[in-house]
Image: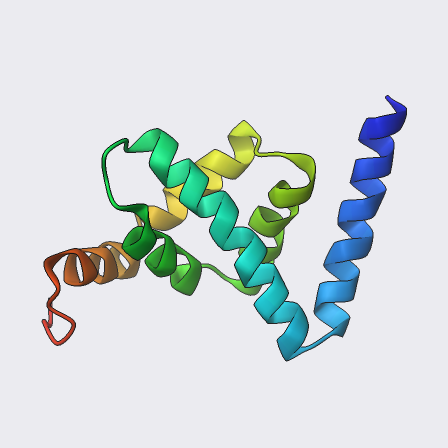
Length: 110
């Protein structure tokens, strides 16, 4: 229980720090979130190259969603985190991005 409380407080402090750091905090949050998203994509879709999908999911996420996903790097991925990643992945802009990147057609307009 004490460990859970410590991790919870640490994640809240981290979220506050990332917001206060401006661009550096945004970069840190996005990098933390990318690791979480990459793991979720790999576990949900084995055998798929997760990198292009991860980038598209991060690019489609709001700053609040990025912070929420990034906190999972500290406290661990929960079903809510996985559901959030899947929800972002199913957005039309995310799907278009992923199809474009996976086909190598960066200029393709869908």
